[in-house]
Image (tube, rainbow, N blue to C red; front, side, top):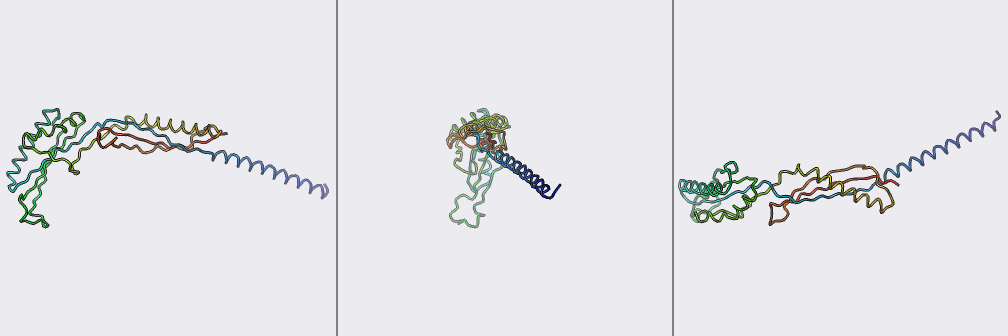
Amino acid sequence: MNLNLKSYVSAAIIAVGIIGLGCSIKAGLSSLTDSTRVVSVRGLCEREVEANLVTWPVVTKEMGNDLSEIYANITRTNATILKFLKSNGISDEEVTVNPPQVEDRQANNYSDDSSIRWRYRVTNVIVVKSSKIKVVNDLMRRQTELMQDGIAIVAGDYQYSTTYEFTELNTIKPEMIAIATGNAREAAVKFAEDSGSKLGKIKSATQGQFTIEDRDSYTPYIKNVRVVTYVDYYLDN
């Protein structure tokens, strides 16, 4: 084989190789472009539920200069409150009587002894923790009945606020996640149709955190449960 022929053959082989490489690169770029066509969507699910656990602190205060007298007053007060609770459907297991909190006002270095009428101020707390939401709500409305026995329930103290909880989240989680995910898919399908594409497989999915909040400040025993899922879908031609 002469030199010119060898040169032609070598050039042809190189040309074929370059063409093949170009085709491979084009195919690879096409595949890369397709794989990066992604739509990111969110799916929301919200549900209102009733709280199933209430914690109600029943707070009273006593003031005086004689601790033994204060103790006797607290004993009578507690007996009256417990009778009121138990006669209206609250069991022993749902009630906790906390130790009284005694404040010696004369021991306060910042107080003016001459202006103190009562040396001791005692806070007394009976805690009701129950799943009987309607019963407790009714008793809260009726607590003024205790005034007939000379007992004033302290209200508006942020340290002893009534709280409502929903503790059965696991029972509704699967259904809410399924609804949120379904809503996300509907949004992705609509986007794909509008862009002239077809919805492909899921690239990634993230379940958002569940949140439980009061529906409003007037009905704290009604909760709003919310979850958002985040899903990335591939788009096909």
